[in-house]
Image 1 (cartoon, rainbow, N blue to C red):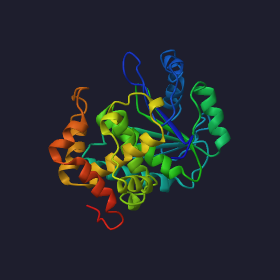
Image 2 (image 1 turned 180 degrees about the horizontal axis):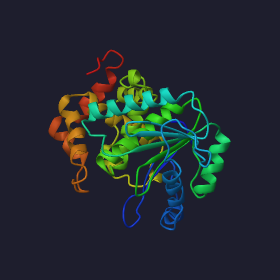
Image 3 (image 1 turned 60 degrees about the vertical axis):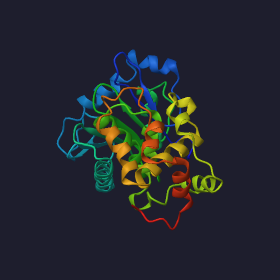
Image 4 (image 1 turned 90 degrees about the vertical axis):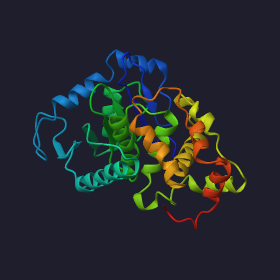
Length: 299
């Protein structure tokens, strides 16, 4: 995948034991900074400076523009010609996630801070998050609504869909296994009409399937830290999510059933043991699933 694109940080456990999403490790000394207030000022700043009606400017606020639709609130430091497009993309993503995964995404509030220029974005992140590596987009959650920080760029909608998936699933389902959280975000970051057969991961996954290779789900499930997540792990996480969602209704039910009770499922739950209850020969099914492209029909 594209190197250096995004980073996300979810820090909602007590005591602080952050779960980090995306492919960059935030070192342990950075995580310790969460407890000492690295995140809190920015969260408070956002909460204190955005109490204005939709679309109105506030001369005392660094967020002069605020645009809200339902539970999604868009903040910016400049007039937004693409505000309607952003809201439309978010609404479509929320609808897709809810419909496909059977989750309720109306439990929380979602915030997007969108800067007009990369330099302004970098200066803000460096000021409020000095120890976090800067990427094109950041999703941060800390004892309150999650916030996506980014700036206007060519792949904005891709980043919005990816980080937005993290935000939606965090509110709806709590903390998910790393491979599943990233696999779902990789799946939904692709435009809706291309999700079945248009992912950048498909070509290599299909090639490997033709060689009779299936990613090791058990190894993926053992991945606990971001430094263990490289390009291969992101590709394989996407492949397993795609396979489970599209191979059969029974395999999709493995994901939806898990998400429906993710907050109560113990840490000993393992997908790699559950897939054997759906497929007598999972390897054969997986390989057949990806070998069939592009003639396979979307289910």
